[in-house]
Length: 113
Length: 112
Image (cartoon, rainbow over all chains, first blue to last red; front, side, top):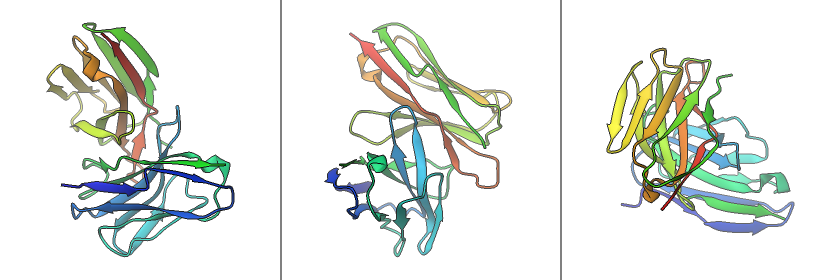
């Protein structure tokens, strides 16, 4: 019973590099979302998707891209990494929407040098 | 913009003591969720409250949703070291986006 799987768990990048954070869920959830968590700031929504082929911006979308070609996968792309993007990134999914329980992965800890 | 303020930000108490964590807003929420997060892991849902005035109990944890659905509290009785973690509240907004609004969290440490 995998739930939400995020890879990698840790990553160090140099400024200007690009990379993709992977997120997969096996619960057939329609809603998927990406958050970043910084000390003292709680969870901030980056991008979200309400179903395959549909994505939208959250609170802090700049510098990030997403796509949702399948129900299971929701990758997050950093286009040109900046030190301000150093954070812990969490992917979450839920069955029908925001009022439903959010199931989180274990996060990706990303450092940008 | 709807905001959720959690207090205290940090709490360190001895095993066996009682504590209350607050989640407050000037806005109305259609429902509110409480999560606990342990180091190196994602948040895990503890409870969802939906009705104004609702009280839910989860063993030694008691959750209450305010009558006006603008605030919530989490009370822990006889805290144990296993209660240590980051407690987050999240409200479903009533504005056009209906997104989850997250509090900044309360870091709780229970000392043996």
